[in-house]
Length: 160
Ligand SMILES: [Zn+2]
Image (cartoon, rainbow, N blue to C red):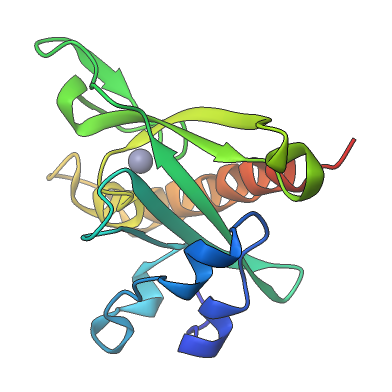
């Protein structure tokens, strides 16, 4: 993905409250390998129920705030992330809900999805399965991942 600046990230959120923006923890963007990311996703070390995803959409940095559901999935089963479609132990996938943008979100309207607990889908599609992934296969998964995250954000932004 095209690199994001701190300013890009701060101004990108479509569903954050002022309070959330004021205390937004920024990820370590200087260490980020942008060529190997479809979106930037990170959890909040001070508020573990919050997570953030920022990606490019129509040439604009677009970010959403996510709330992690309390309590995980039942351990011992497999679960699939709705963004990267990686199948993995259920403890590594969590239900997140994103408040819709604007008034709908202020009225408590949310969009929910099962997503990798650490929001690091870009990393996962490059390391799992660990063997025999061709560059073409990774590129296909990357395209599909970006399409799904854009679609999720578009749903969050839909006002009607
Ligand atoms: Zn994922």
